[in-house]
Image (cartoon, rainbow, N blue to C red; front, side, top):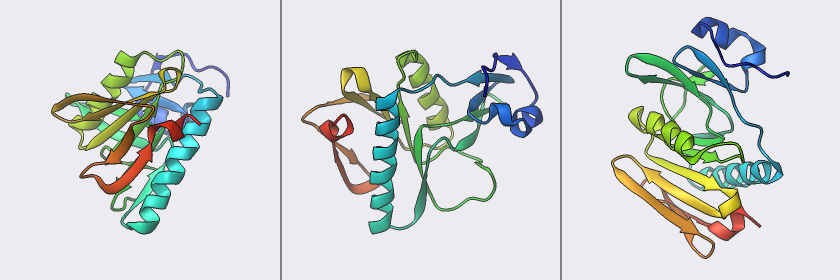
Length: 177
């Protein structure tokens, strides 16, 4: 796929044009996602694998990478694509009509932390219960939840699934190994 310039399109155009498959849709504008690095890709795979293994032991959901999530913010439609997500229950169709229960975003070098946190605000308004913003260059994870401030997890700490994924434990160091 060539570069997609940010431009205004209808929801129908966004959903039907294969050129936008790896793009987000924010208030009528197609927004191309920044390309991930090798570490971004490896972390994506690790998170997906660990979450899938968790669901093998605790059935009742599915794990996805870049799942199109239809969100509503202030009456406007947005489609966000978390790097990895876990959805409790089932859904039909090519996208989900809400935010996943857990959203994982992995910052690429060109992403700003502020822009990434704004995505989590969208997720939380639409029902997400837990978010992990993984910062590979800092080897740090920001743990985000609705109505609470971020917590920081570093090498030596353990990520847990909280009330969303009880019993899930991931050593932060293993994300970056």
